[in-house]
Image 1 (tube, rainbow, N blue to C red):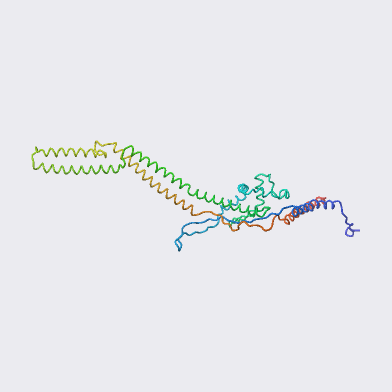
Image 2: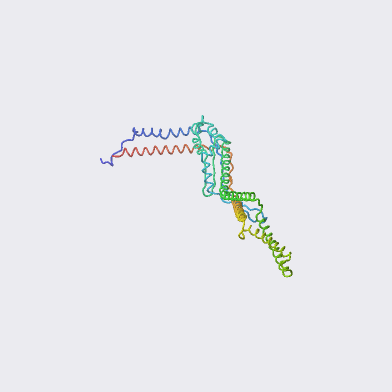
Length: 378
């Protein structure tokens, strides 16, 4: 009888079949039944509150409209600040803040005794609470539009809404802090220049005050002008006296007493002119001390003028920097206010059971294929 004519022997259950069936029960049936039993009989309902917002830039630049008022334009959301806010919402920092404000640990561990797998362990650390927070608060961030949407879950619907509102409030505080930091950075260098200019001007004015006290001169410029006026007057008197002497000399003898009087007058005026000119450094008998005093005052006056100009420029630069910093301000625009759930949507019971069934079945199938592949090897 050929092989093609042989009749196959009747099929019957072999030990390996029983082993695979038992393995199916252990790897698939029991985990799925246990998961379904926990999900539908033990797991507590979780409520979700949805919140959506974005970071916007308000441009407060002055424009000319029909009413001649202020025009505002709303710019697009800033990706950098949105990235920072997205990282902040996932961070331990916001968890610590909201925990101190709402007592997150108490909210999440409300049903710990009844639902030990899905509820939070109140004895956990802040790192444990952060990991649980990241599981219970799902953050969706669109990098193109800058929209951030958050789903906050809790075992009570009011707790979920409170958590979502706390996320919004603390995110608003973070955005305000970023805005203040941006304004501070924009005006920091201009303010430093202004302070240096103020210190320089203050020092120069103190030097001017000390100079006036030391020399007992309020305004050396006015003093010089007075001295120049006196010198001009003396020179005019000298010229008149010389003319009068020349006129008298042609009509009288040299012994006339009036000529001696005019000569004495000429000498006195000439000496006074020499003394006044010496104060300005003119002539051999110049008063170096007075000249040095005037030179020192001129130097101080030049320094003061330069310091005043520098202060004015620094003040204008600071005002411009402040105006530019205030032209743009960040704010949080919520397009979905924290919602209040009417029914529980978590945990996803059928999804969880289906996922466990899929992975357990795939594991059992892979094990079976590996077993038969090794058994059929020669």
